[in-house]
Image (cartoon, rainbow, N blue to C red; front, top):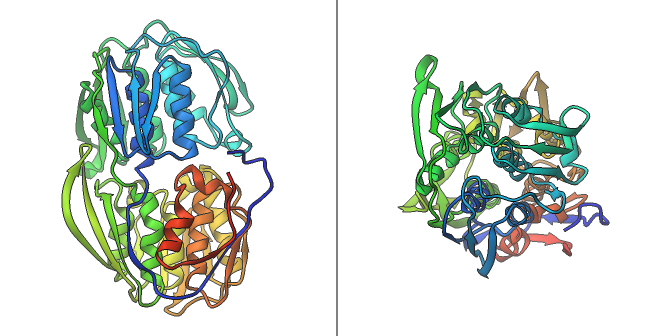
Length: 453
């Protein structure tokens, strides 16, 4: 899918209650990591429930270019034949990641720790995103940056060392991507590499490394134990394994909030990952008065999952602490939509990381709210959205800035505003939720327009 094609606008309009059940796509974070660790393992890795969105397919293509055998066995079912640590080959062409920030940064960690040379590039959106925070620790580990765009952006070329240098590194921001890139580079480092986080971020890399056979120790760190020290013993032999990818909580967030704000709705969302480092949105919505029932908790792919029954609810404004941000960093756009229907102000604190996502999400959310008559304020890195418990006016046209989560969030808004809401382009929704339109329409949502791949 090209993001340089003609925009494909979509319009969401208020209508009947949403009812039924769905299973969201496989978790994007785990899908990326399954492809990558499959590449770095000896033997075969079989993956069930892979998210087959553009971002993950770009990571799969990069793994193939680095030497992995890749075979699609059916919908969401993939076989990866790995080359092991140290067994990768130089890719013949530039690794084009499209709009995939996670995939590009994690593969930078892989290349940065291995004796290979690779060039990274992406679309116009990815070329704006900062990579210096990834490159700095990799350079300390022995990676050479042979060429880069201004400010450490793609396109850039990395040459990894014969062996990476083990380091102790404190991340400058609460970012699972930084942590993961360092840990992936450390797989080819003798000794122990330790990453220190002041605020704990999603731990899928640590969990999956253990699943494939690596030795990873995690201990509390810092005042109050909010941070973590993650220590990886380098040069393990990773073994291919079976991975069942649970449903993505970040994708589940859109039908979940839609069910809360469309009157009379009753929706069940199946198989959603309940990792406590990913459930900040659910915690916040429960505080706001949301009726969300957890059913049939179970284990899938090394993660706890559950079915969520969600019913339309009267919401109230709350204060969302900054330390919760790592557990819901991708969900703030849709939380802002929920807050627009709540009674009173909802203050979301410490959103600086939103400024360096696929778009400046803080600015994009604010503009979308303004276009639809919703009261908001930005104070530093805090966003305050004030509702009166009634449906906002709506009627706006929202600029998505090639950001899938902005597009989906404001389409959900339009399902419950007084007037329909249009987003300027829905093509990039396929990066994380390819079935979003048929899924929402299957629940009864009125969304006009089509997206052609």
